[in-house]
Image (cartoon, rainbow, N blue to C red; front, side, top):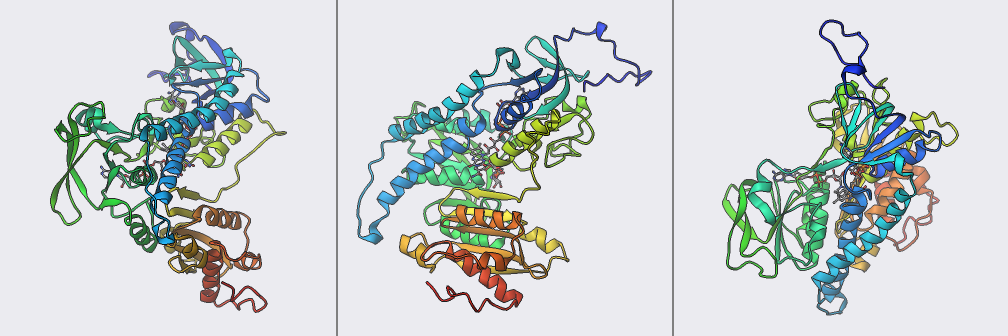
Length: 511
Ligand SMILES: Cc1cc2nc3c(=O)[nH]c(=O)nc-3n(C[C@H](O)[C@H](O)[C@H](O)COP(=O)(O)OP(=O)(O)OC[C@H]3O[C@@H](n4cnc5c(N)ncnc54)[C@H](O)[C@@H]3O)c2cc1C
Ligand SMILES: NC(=O)c1ccc[n+]([C@@H]2O[C@H](COP(=O)([O-])OP(=O)(O)OC[C@H]3O[C@@H](n4cnc5c(N)ncnc54)[C@H](O)[C@@H]3O)[C@@H](O)[C@H]2O)c1
């Protein structure tokens, strides 16, 4: 794989290694990054290739386990317990939760440690000479520099993940009052107040969890949009449901940010009397200031690729640092022996995608036909674990609307009066299913609502397996379940498509 350097006089001239540092190892495959994607690539490839190495900077327990999916869901689990205890008055159950912030944070870290221990054990089982702890750089010769090694690899899998994006200057201005998803789970105790900047998946999940745990949280987002929702009705409904418990300044503009001395700040926090502040214009243009203990910056993530040197392997990046000529199933870059997988390719920065792409690239690099796993063309699917949950599956509404060949209808169901949702007191939400009139297939769906994670899985399975809407409606829906809302939305799609209803459906009038 290693590229010979360009020379001004003769670009095709063979590279003279003698004038350069000596190569310390030659391997068939090098994996850079040992998160979910990298570990899966390594696991798959080493079934067939012996001279393979994996290089990783930082912890070896994956972003998902250390600072991502798992600690965030552990925090949400505690928050939901507190919320249920504090908000059962409508059932005639009156209680006030005593929240022990230190214990909450300790459990998050202890359970995270439990999950980490499996990965640590697994990584420990790899031979010492197959793993290198250090930050890799691909030099002009296409050789991997790491620590004092210079490695020549026939094939390279880049699985370097992504990092928190912090707008310029904010880290210096906020100092110790700044939190990100990398640091927030290390809090020893719950603070009294916190601003969360960004109403994407990270911002929403953490803002709601801390609110439910008694922290006074204020969310700022520059767009009047949550979770990047592209269907305006679903976005408006999500804002309606979430703002019942979250203070959100959507459409606000942050003009300054920083820290200042404040006598009223929580003395339990080891920051002396320093408060964080945010100067902002609210959506009406009024100049305001927020002040509190911490600012959690959740303004997005960027792939770790810009300083890796992948261009020295012939990889071209677009203006958003996404590799051009990416095979979305395997991560392969054009006809190069380079694969870029997981968050590193900035295609779909989600765990299941990183996992699948890693396995596919690992199969590809060694021509491992026997155990080959190549990611099928996957149905886009995302869940935000707020309450209610926010789910998107398949094509988005703007993408469908842009394609004149896709004659579509939108089947709708509102959860406000949905039977089981009302029984459970979780009746806020809206589901839109985009149905294709010509094919009787689901093109996509967007929703905010209870049990959305399960509804999303059914929809993703239906789209992936090319089930018709009739196929799904011919499947029984148990009563009374929240999933009956899915049936109601699908029936709405059918009605709008004017496909004759299933007269034999005995469940038509149930619930
Ligand atoms: C707070 C939070 C919550 C999340 N929740 C969810 C969720 O609920 N569901 C979901 O699907 N996804 C979730 N995600 C996203 C998910 O965690 C990521 O998509 C996934 O972990 C990406 O895996 P990866 O293997 O691509 O990268 P990573 O696991 O980040 O691994 C990349 C590795 O490469 C190393 N590295 C980087 N540069 C170099 C270099 N030059 N040399 C050597 N090593 C290097 C890094 O240090 C790291 O160890 C969440 C993310 C966050 C931050
Ligand atoms: N449940 C899940 O699957 C889950 C959970 C957490 C994270 N993730 C992954 O992590 C990725 C990153 O999440 P994220 O929430 O950080 O990013 P994001 O890009 O989804 O959201 C960032 C938000 O910050 C806002 N923003 C950016 N700059 C701002 C500024 N200067 N002022 C005010 N608002 C600003 C944006 O408008 C956007 O709403 C997601 O794309 C997702 O793939 C997934």
